[in-house]
Structure formats: structure tokens, C-alpha cells
Length: 126
Length: 184
Image 1 (spheres, rainbow over the protein chains, first blue to last red):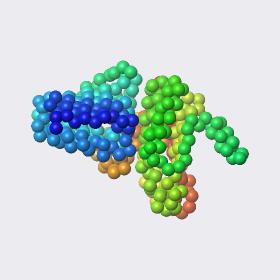
Image 2: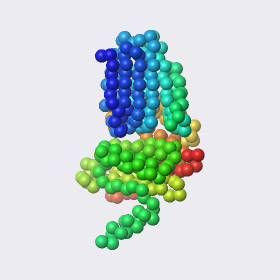
Image 3: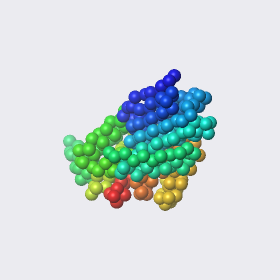
Image 4: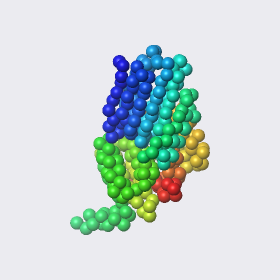
């Protein structure tokens, strides 16, 4: 499996994981009622990746909305990335937020406070 | 026949943008969110307002969705029903939800709501982070983050009430305000 990709829906984000390139991107809305079910395949893919990770891994998160049900799952994804980071692949997380969206910036800071990986807060204009 | 007008008149006076009474399904949530997004678009709300209201709506509606079953087994259909309303008065959005709850679950919920209401902005942030990092993820979803998130995003106390129906169930009402002051 070289690439893991799923299309976005009104309630779930698009996910693109280029394993060869060490690039993971999550974009859109993450507001499903059952987020565990949605994020499990990604956590599994990261598990696999951790056994043969690239020297550097870039993660781009660009969410418009996410619910509290997703927030725990996103933390699980970040925890997997943290162990990949410890395992020798230099992980960077680019957390995107729209310029007037303080809540999204704060959400990024919440993760930054918990997860031991370099976070970059990236402001995007609407 | 006059009944319909009474309901119409009441909704009109209270500036209800949308109301729903019935079973809360996943498809319904998708529709309500879509309708409210369009309405706010047509009302030319600021992006900031739209986002804030949308986020709070998602949490309120999913709370209802996840707790619909809690009082189901008692009196059948009646208890699967919930009410949801959103109004806008003088620039303030009121999001109101109501659902049945087993009396034995009231104390636990009230304790959680009071705890959230007792915390300052900074303490809420700390509390959110600690529940996010250490809290158990329930199968239903958020594992207790929803109310903390709503309080954090709105900067308002959670206004609630329990109305006892009989010795088994009560009706739980939650009123969330999204005011303009926190949007500036």
C-alpha cells in the first residue's frame, strides 16, 4: 500500500496519506456521530507506516470544523505520530486555521500542549 | 385550526429560525446543519458568527443524538422524541434542546454541568485538555468533552432545567447562548 486516500463528505474530511512521500493530509470537516469508526483505518495505516517510516513525515491538518467526538480520535492520530517521531522519523505537524478562527487556533494549541512533536500554526486567508 | 396559528404566532414572536420535535437521527442532523448553514449565509452573518454557531449546533445536536436512547426503554416512543429550537433575538442566538432523562441520571449530569459552570475561561481550557488527554472515550463519542467545548466556545454559562414528569423520567432542557460580545 503506497497511498491511502479517502474522499471528503459533508461530515468527514478527505484524507490523503502518501506513504512513499511521508505526507499525510487531513482536510475539510470532521463532524461524524461515530468518529472512532471513521478514524480507525487511518490509525491502522499509521501503525503499518511506523514499521517502515520515512526519515521525515509531514502532516498537514486543515479542518474547517471538527466535533468533540473527532477531537479524541485526532489525538489518537497524533499519539501514533508521536511514537513515529520517537522512532526516528522527524514529524512536523502543520496546523492550519483561518485568520479569524481563534477557536481553531486554540484547538491546535490544545494538541500542541499535549503532543511532543513540532507544531507549526499556519494562518490561511479565507 | 387555531392551534396551528397559536404555534405559528409563538414561533414568530420568539424569532424561531428553526424548530424540530421528534426522533433525532443522523440524517436529520445533516439536514438541520445544512439548513442552518444556508440560513446564516442568507442572513449574511460574519464568518466568525457562522463558525461559532455551527460548532455549538453540532455539539448540541450530537448530544441529543447520543442521549436519545437513554430513556427509551421506559415508555416506548414518547421518550425517543426530543425538541430542538434555534432563535435569534437582537443578534443573540439561542440554541435550545430538550429531551427525556431517567431521574437516576439527573444527579450525574447536574454535577457535570455545575462543574463546567463553576470554571473560569483558563480553568475550562485546562479541564478540556485534561479530559481530552486522560478521559475515557465512550463508545458514543465525546466522552464528556461536549459541554466543556460549548462553554469554552460560547464563554457563557450553560443554562439548564430538569422538569420532573413522573417518578421515572424528567425533561431536561438546555439553553445555550451565542452572543455578539464574544464574537467581536
